[in-house]
Image (cartoon, rainbow, N blue to C red):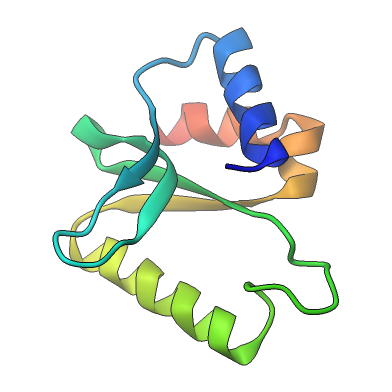
Amino acid sequence: MSKLEDELEYQLDLAEVKGFVREHKFHPTRKWRLDFAWVDKKIGVEVEGGIWLPRSGHNTGVGITRDVEKGNALTLLGWKTLRVTGKMVKSGNVIDLIKAIL
């Protein structure tokens, strides 16, 4: 869990957005997890941290390929997923997106 995820959880609590689970393992055989999941609605939020770092797990060819595979698996399993950036979390704008999809 990251500081950005902790911040988003704090914002969700303030906005009284309930029913989410953190680090939900959504796939039956893979170890993939969603940062935030509303399991009963099959709605997930992925916080994309580290995208501006020189070399992080999300901005290399291997990392992008891994994220695409995970995103496609979510879609095939019937999930709707929001991918949000740190800037979106820090600004608080992500709460409106989450409320809209819920």
